[in-house]
Image 1 (cartoon, rainbow, N blue to C red):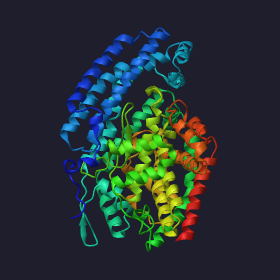
Image 2: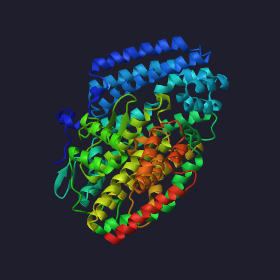
Image 3: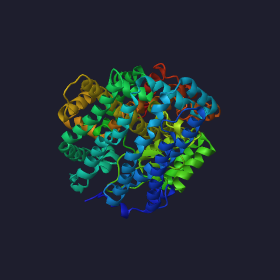
Image 4: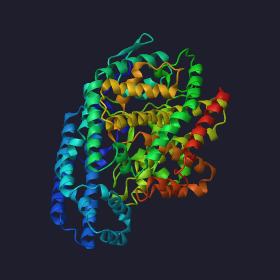
Length: 596
């Protein structure tokens, strides 16, 4: 058998991230938990029902900043260690210690925002004038004030808050602890299968039998857990639905968009325009790739492959360091130093091992590293994932210029720096090598990774979410079979009648953890819309644009998503940037048709 997953302890430590940068030992972490609990109890004693002057409020907010910073360290240490070794009982126990501490501590500090919102607006404005670094934080409290509940109700919700995350924990338990995938046979050889192997390697393999047989085995396992996963997902939405009604929103979608400070118009535009206008370009692209692979039919298992090419060679993590520095060097010396630091100080977990979380992400401590999770294959697809996650790292390292209270921008903007890095990486390489074969290879990688992932995969998830939320708000009955049918219908609508989309495709909704994070999936296409425009500006006029772009990233949440984009020179109040992004994808397909 090939591709059996190694245990975590068998992995070369140089391929793993170093969480000792947060706490040097488990014991230091546990002491940090005890200190944090005591600090929270003192905070409640000092400030609850005592926010009577701007001086007291300023002291409270400064201590609250410190509490939030410590919480960032504790949560990252707890979950980062577990995310790479989910079957490790010791690490699970350490994460549980954090969950228990948070369950008792969060209600003790939740009073702060509730009681600030009850104060006279003039006093809050006085605090903003004294401490301008908190202006957007205070403005957000005032924005949410009409939807605030009675303090006793807010206190009750704060006490129940830990249970609201239970559906997601159930989902992860099913995914990482209960699901086991049987071996599959392709080309007369037996292969191990898993989430990591399928999503990072098999699904994009140029070997048709490996690709299709791995998919058949993968989805046969998912199908066994369809109803349990549906129950978890629907219970998560019902929690959101209840809170939306309590806070006086017309729909659950309106409630979730309000939290992002984004209009319903922007949300619907991303879905409707892409479903209609990007689909024809992507259909052309997939047919072109399928023809190059000699496929007589195109199934759902074939949609994510790129053009066959001799350039599709694997590189090592160490080789990717200089590769990305060369591609992203336009962003300046400080940005290059951040990339070097990420490699040299082991912020990146490259390993593929049993029990590791799937996909890729970047998790930044407010006063520490940006930890990047990957499952490294060495293919260009994975190099672009690393460029993407380094974009998040660069963003949040720069955003530390803001208070931790003004740190996290709206989800609508969050994927712009990451996707801009992907486009910038490919466009830099295209300029460096004019060989038509290389150009065709790289354009294909750019479409099949960057644009497919962010503007097809995640966008179809967004369309699915919109339909599910709408049906639940209309009190319709949903279960696993209905969720599969909704997903299948949306996929077929996008791809049309020329593709053989089988019933297994309906199970794809089960793969996405972002469904438990509000309306996250649509923001990938929103971010890529901004990212595509920024990559173009950075190439055309780097001297004028780089400084402005980095300044925008340093603003954190001090501006709304629309204003952040506008500050960088992209006006998303109209559909012009989105339509230009779609046209750019069309032009890439046009060029491929000339080259192939």
